[in-house]
Amino acid sequence: MAAKKIRVILFGLGPIGAACARVLALRPEAYEFVGAIDLDPRKVGQDIGAVIGLPEKYGVKVSAQAGRVLAKDADLTLHATGSYLTQVKPQLMQIIAAGKNIVSTCEELSNPWVQNARVADELHKLAKRHRVTVVGTGINPGYAMDTLPVALTAVCQKVERVRVKRVVDASKRRRQLQQKIGAGMTVEAFHQAAANKEIRHVGLAESVGLVARGLGWQLDEIMETIEPVVATQRVVTEHVIVEPNFVAGVRQFGRGLYAGQDKVILELEMAVDAPEAYDEAWIEGTPNVHSLVKGIHGDLSTAAVVGNAARRVVEAKPGLLTMMDLALVSAR
Image 1 (tube, rainbow, N blue to C red):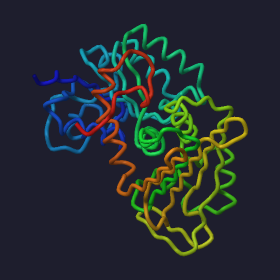
Image 2 (cartoon, rainbow, N blue to C red; image 1 turned 45 degrees about the vertical axis):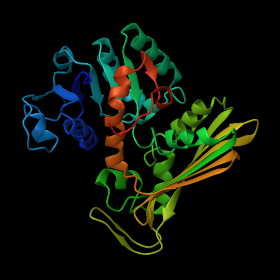
Image 3 (tube, helix red, strand yellow; image 1 turned 90 degrees about the vertical axis):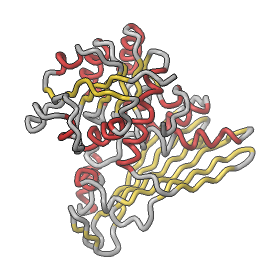
């Protein structure tokens, strides 16, 4: 018997939201769009097909009236409006109160107890009250540096430490991402912007916490550090020119400590001069496991993880959950 079609409301149709919507659109037997919300006046009133870059018309127009759209009969809201939990909290609460499950690209929602425990508890209680499920996910955080390495530990009898390194070639990525990693800045300007948290990847601490959550570890502390990747030669992308000795990107470390020892070590490098993109993980235990994965694409894979997690979210128990709480997510 075919699974019931999931009725979806799209909330946020920027580049990532549109990419996630396209994943669901390519599965018309499984998903049906019933509403769309975005505040961009250029999108309001348009059919969602045109907004997400597909030739088909879906008979559903984008609206700026969130309350009106959320009153529609739907099973799931695909939410993609921001990275910071406190900023998107009102939207999430409105969706939950409307009785809709949520899969969101908000990085801090992937494991909100790490930095926003009070908000997380509030959302969890509200979600249980309305019997809906809320999950934040994506490629990073949500999969490459947390769910994937935790899955690798299934072949281990004992795990002592998890180390992950992710290298992202940002040279062909969106302008916003190249700006977010400080490409083209002076080193001095980078340090100032990093101190103001204007330059950083959001979600590394959440990934550290997700690894610990998946392995049942209670960490004493989670620490983050950040430094620039400095270009050694001229780099030209569609959006920026980076001269030698200027910033090509960012290198961040996330560490999870227990009893003074590093239990989780995550290293993320995103730069426009990265020679090769890859995801590497080392599981120190019995036995030791080493994994090297190539081909994970930041934007395409984020949309894939969100789209592939959608049905799992609808089928999961009510509450604010993480990827560690869902059934295995796969491409179906």
